[in-house]
Image: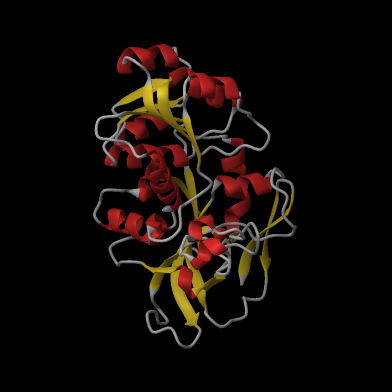
Length: 339
């Protein structure tokens, strides 16, 4: 099979490798669409240390090529999307069904070979049926919405509360859409006009370009006392510092942005403002992919709108370079098999 392989820092090759060997309770999935995520780019840039060479990627959809015996829910030829986090199944959290909190959860493409290949071996337990009216490309773009669902579960926006979303990349746009669907009045913040335009389409009531206005001053003017909820989706020092300037006293905060070594918290503002802080490290496990898929099928979520580039698997090196260098406006890049 053809597979994308990270061989070193900013080094990508497309290699011919053996297809994965079948195992009990697993399915061999022929990948139809795979998308680049921030985690993939961190590996590519050498910011996350993983054994190399490594096939990256964890967001994908496809068709079951072969399935282990004893699983009547699925059959060969079924369209599926695959949950990318594989719980251990044996820790205390897994024992009570809280797979999102698994102590030894593995992410494909990070802790093992990923989905940027023609075929992937995935646990049957991680397969979700893909309706005919949801495209493979849409299904490969669900994770940012499942992360946002996990965030909303924690910060629990109430109808009409002000929610500031700092950063409108794919993760931030997912947060904007879910906060809006949850009843929040969303203020989206970014420096890119095209991202803020998309945020409007995803439900933001107000957009603020931080290069063109004083964000804390504007938020205070709009809300009166500050935001009820702040969701930080960048991980940079500037946006982490901004949290304490826009959150009201006794507000709720969610940290979603991931940037190695980029930012630290000063505890004093948290104490003085009596803030509740939630760390959100991914999707929350059971039921969230299924719910987001149902919202996609109903038209309430439109994951395909995030796609700015479509490239064949063989042009993965170009895809990673575009996403890493931001040499042109980019949100999500999808890799396909070209068929």
